[in-house]
Image (cartoon, rainbow, N blue to C red):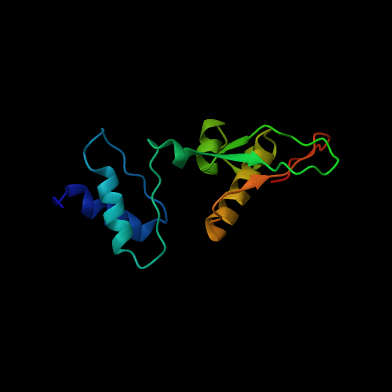
Length: 137
């Protein structure tokens, strides 16, 4: 790997903060830099690439069992990074979040990502009857 000036700065930032953003133009090695730090780390580290659609959103298919209920049959999509959802929604504090209409979707997406990140199933789906007021994933 080519030695980069940013490498020392990223290393310093990672000692101080749990999350570090590496920004810059395309094709300068941001992903390679992130993967290098992830491979050197003793902790379980992952990187988020905002240019890969699979890193931004998750699509869950509905569970299709015939249970005698009218079930929601359309897929459910949500942002995988709740912080990104908060930034887009101009949410700057916990109080802002609690009073915002996206609070439920934010929590649901966060919980789904945590559970799916630990268990890593081959596929995941959600279950919701058409009459439910609150979504269940």
